[in-house]
Length: 187
Image (cartoon, rainbow, N blue to C red; front, side, top):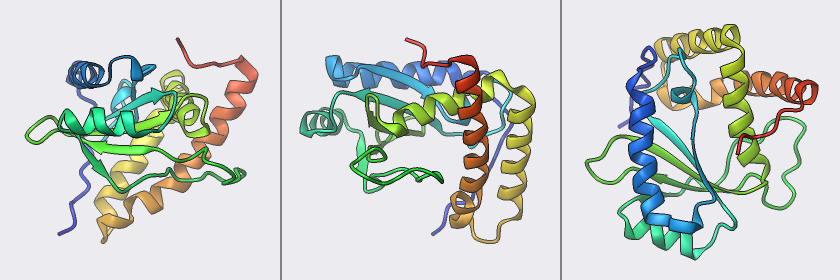
């Protein structure tokens, strides 16, 4: 059964909910986690989103230690092991590979993306978030697009396929902004 896509107004509680998920992930991974970041729409103040906390865990390597640590802590590995490839990027090597986990049984819904430090997809998630935080009008337009897509798509499984090109447009603008401002991920 296909899950319906529901977009809701930004919730002030999302930040605290991320902190709770991040604490559990940090406890499971210890020093394997170089950083744990709140990413995605729930990380952008005022942005409408699915009620799912997106978390990015940055690691040195995508290896068995990471898989075992998160699996032992009850997080569920899912087969989605790569990110959408934006236009203009080659798929040479593994710059878009990741591990993707879901929340523990009975816990707050979360999508947990584990990416290598310095990989294109690790940078992408942070730049996209920071760009939307710095550009509230773009964030509002993106939220409106997501609401209309969720309400108007006959097949909810096509939501990411339709949304990804819009995300690419925002990302390309974010890359220009990063070049102009000297943006780097915050420590």
